[in-house]
Image: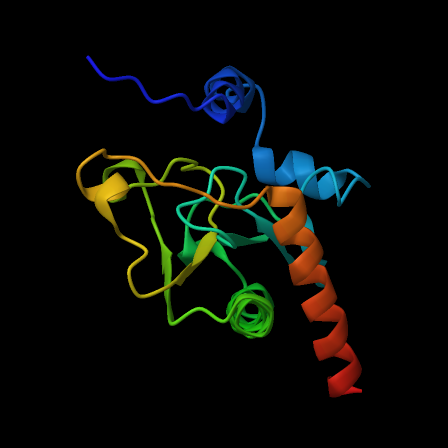
Length: 167
């Protein structure tokens, strides 16, 4: 049997038990530790953070502060700001990482692939030509070539530049 050494997975495995004790989105958004919690942006009703267990580098999540399980439970302002957060995430990722495309979506319910079913959130996944390679196709694994702290730093710099341009 071949083995793939992926020590970062242990943190994910250990968080599964923690997730049962409270909502990760509510917990992270209520703390004043944005760097530690990988929070990129805070709006009035929604926020954007890096996915700690990304599909690709720069994989962002946008979520409302309010704990709701379904997009139909969001108010008009929350819905509008959630879509605005998706657009902001795309702009920041384009500026900082120059992806070739994006997957953007919601997984509503466990059967639809939601890992966190009780707090609606939007995935913003940057994609590059060739980002599915032998590792993912044959090995069934993804290679994330950059530390999350470095990705967050790049995205924050891009966000600051974009905010200056909008003024």
